[in-house]
Image (cartoon, rainbow, N blue to C red; front, top):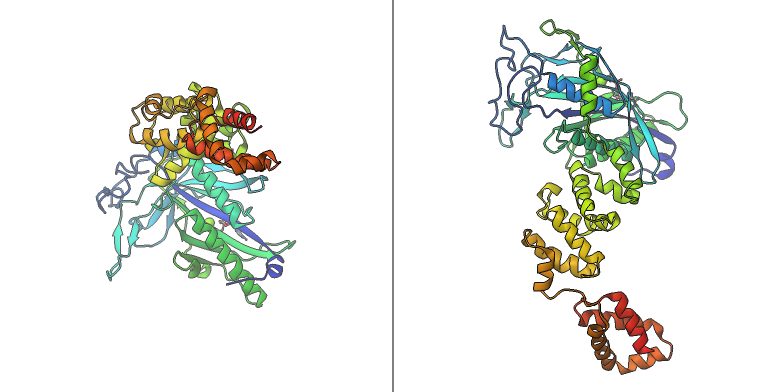
Length: 486
Ligand code: ADP
Ligand code: MG
């Protein structure tokens, strides 16, 4: 489905996201059942989760603490008296016939998340609220199986729902916001942020309007995207679909649509008219939960360093370019590893180059997290220092010593370099013979050089480096070469 740029440019896109994050508590929000992902279906289902008559929910305060931390990280106002409401509807994966949620008293109100687009422009995206609620079970549709299977293990797992104001203007911004939210929940260690496994989920509300219009258009809610990329694809598709409708003088119907990950399209699930009236009312089995001043202060003290603060430190204290700092603060663990190397080795930009070059490609190739990376910070620092001290060239260090270290992370880089005769030759005596040999091999080129074809220096350098197996110090070799060629 294509759209002419001139037509697309007439319209503005309006997007609001509803992001669900499963909290990493060990037990559920109102019961002691385990929350582990991937357990045998229907094994973590106590009578409370199944809502047997006469059972009473018991509130897990840890979940509220996690939600408050997210609120603090997003500059929200924290609600002191929290009431849990029943949201009533029938669905096979909802054993109680209602979901416990916060209707009138979301734990966090207002606030914002900062994003920066590709051009470096910063934008504060306003949040409407963050509330706490319980997850539903999961319907499983196996191929070849006629019946729908139900797994209640997930029912009652704590969730926060982060609701933005309709302040996003493009699929790119939605992607940036989701990356930022994922980064925050991981820094706070309140959610693993895994979209494929569904511990982070996002519904996108999308509408379009003529540029400069005073009222928003009719919005469509899109569900079932299991990656940030797919959220962006779903939004892109919706923008085109809606513009085409308006251009054809048809109406955009306010409805819920589902994303198809094979075709990158969306299809109608239900229109808003058929939506339930949820008849919210406060759960009579749960008393209001009060956030005391002292608890709030304790939570504030427990807040970890956040990505923003680390960015500031990495750009001003370590004087790294923003591009480097962004990569190095992607996770707490990468940042910690980088800083540990820096402690031993005083040259942050060199350490950063190693992190963004050889280390990153090893992580990508093996699908590793930094925590899977086998070489410890001390050893990396020693290797990097050898390059700084001109004991090894960067090329030899990264292409020969580094791969050996990956195989034997307990060895030290100096012994590897010695064993494989890789120590750089920094003295005239060892380099000059190589240069003489190369010059003797190319008499014509030497003549041409002496007649003014100075560009040939690159070719001579290449030969010297090749002949020495990249072991000579390139600066010194270049100097000697020029001198010898005259
Ligand atoms: P509903 O009552 O249909 O659930 P809400 O007002 O609760 O709608 O908003 C849900 C989400 O939709 C919020 O993230 C909000 O920012 C977003 N939203 C509201 N109006 C629009 C609109 N016209 N276009 C895009 N998103 C919108
Ligand atoms: Mg809503």
